[in-house]
Image (cartoon, rainbow, N blue to C red; front, top):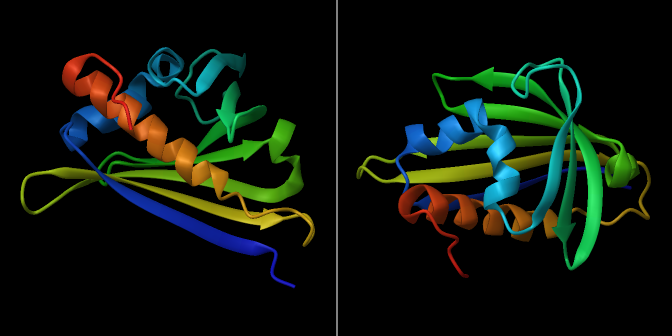
Length: 156
């Protein structure tokens, strides 16, 4: 019985890597105003959205259903434009581990890409693999890229 897994998706973006990363590194509270599938986000514990001891509460939509979870920052690597988030509570209770890693990559040809990685451990084999998260993260990435480039959401 395999309970642990990893899902990865990488998407090209038009936004420069530094600008895309900055949104997550210092303006995370703005994501709820940019992404169609993020319904609400609030600071649950702490005073700073970007402090690793702060906890944020998110309400979001995956597969047409509204979900909730809490999130805290586990690690920030500014040099490599990489942030690892720990998700827990709410709809994440079916997992003993649920880590979401954002990595924004400068490509050799001058473009950028966003790589999302989900590391998870299910509480038992009856729990579905979180494949819906890949669509959610892809759509959120497109919304953010469109907003940062044009100031509007990009339709898929």
